[in-house]
Image 1: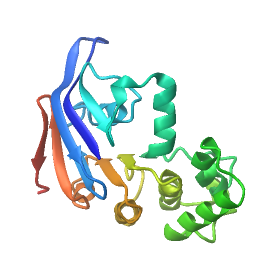
Image 2: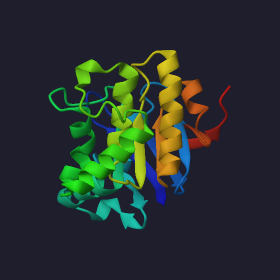
Image 3: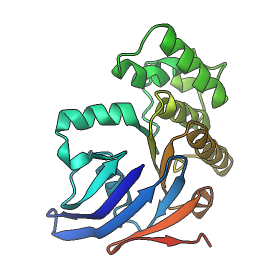
Length: 224
């Protein structure tokens, strides 16, 4: 489903440096992998490249046969809206919208509204255990509940690929464990694939495979 070949990225500022070179990755539908690495190894950069938010120096990224390098910015934006779901450490929940309105945002961006939006939003909120909180405001929710809203928002439009960047960095251990297992289970239940970027061995242990990112690329590893 996702094929990454020979991916390389460097930055000129504030000093010239190569982040990584020759990254290869194959990801099948239904597969959930964790990417680990030292701070500065380029984990978030790799997610940005896969999502088409940044351009690689060399190499290719293909999502279901679509070469991201061949798309212009408008086409990449539409691809992200339709085929990607994102879960961030900082939640990025809009404080002036209800839980249901936050979750429905990806559907609105795709021009889906009315009864279909109501049905999909209610369905995914029930699956993440927030079926009774649809009318709540974000300030009324705990950190773990906010991340559940973010997971629901990432999955409501049926993406092919979910990218999660340190999704439990702001959560206590109990909430983090619940969110990690919920994220994995829901990605698989929706027939998507997922990439989890994390520093946490406990988080990585929830994945099907664990990959270590370094300047020379990606290699499979085991969680201690």
